[in-house]
Amino acid sequence: MKKMIVMTLLTVAVFSLTVALTVDSIQYADAAKFEGSSGKVSPKSYGSANKNLVCGDKLCSDLAKSG
Image (tube, rainbow, N blue to C red):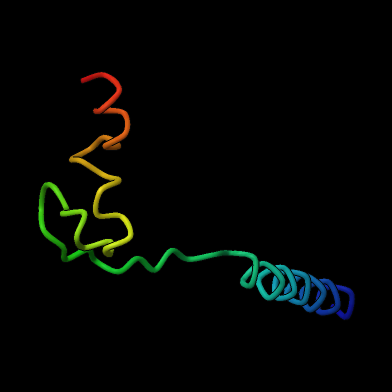
């Protein structure tokens, strides 16, 4: 009977340590819901430094070269 109690306590201890050590290694992704505009975003929203760099979904310099 004593051997059964010791084995049960040892098993509980091993499972408890396993859970305690793995809880910190699990990473949860807490993503905030995006509430921006659907579709295109104006280059103005990225600041005046980027005003003439982005034209739609392309760089303005790429459009000028192909254009």
